[in-house]
Image (cartoon, rainbow, N blue to C red; front, side, top):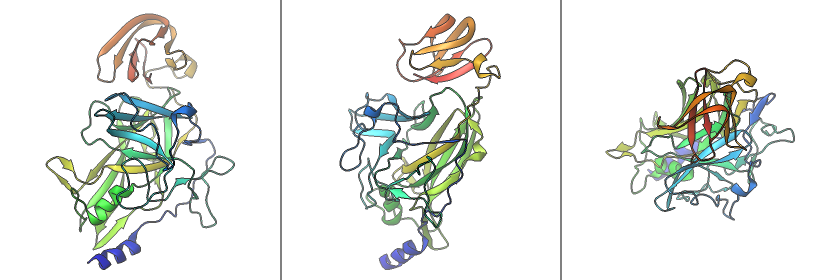
Length: 340
């Protein structure tokens, strides 16, 4: 039976063979360009040194270019969820719950900042290029655990991204462990990408990271390109996971995946409810921790749970006293979501 599984594995693993798309007018997530270089340091094993350093139970963020990625540490710094940057090349069974990917490394960029490809159109893997490990919290709270925002306060049209399996999850599906069972016919392990528009409506795209059908085990092992253009213009993207191997307490498959080179159109779109011109829109000045209104007016600010946290009048409202997190500022003429 083990020999049969190995034959199926060799025959059906999906190795990345996706042609990179043209990157003109597109911003591609590049974790070598963090806004705060001190945030992204890696150990010899490629694991991010900030995995367990956050404030307990509080969703925190790290940034690169226009992208803001969530990360939460819980239970006294022993558990985490959200995203963690990583440079590990580990593809082995029983990988740590911090680092590794089945593609063997991140995707390289060429001198123009585009996704690098070889003569066969396959993406080029670079052991030193960081990628994202996503850990989905199956016990979701008010905020999605794995989410990505934009630090320019604008909506952006999503183009696509690359995904692959995290080693522990992959081998859960192939061999099982103390909690998960090996996959059989009809089983699936699925990543769902949610695009949240400015009016808070959502569209989704599903990707089967592992599936077992027609007596064949099929899994994403290289970097697989996912077209996300159907999501349209979004204020944020978040990720959930599901598995047919589930029980009373939820899915048994380890809820982890890997992501690289999220691409969005670089021309931002003003949020719904604001005037059409960016200059007339409500904006957030991150450096000064201030909400800037097009004219002096009364504004109410709510947290992500919908609770009113402050009210003020003026054209420039300081929010320096608020805790870090996600907020909504509402006026008579517009609404803006911002991240402090």
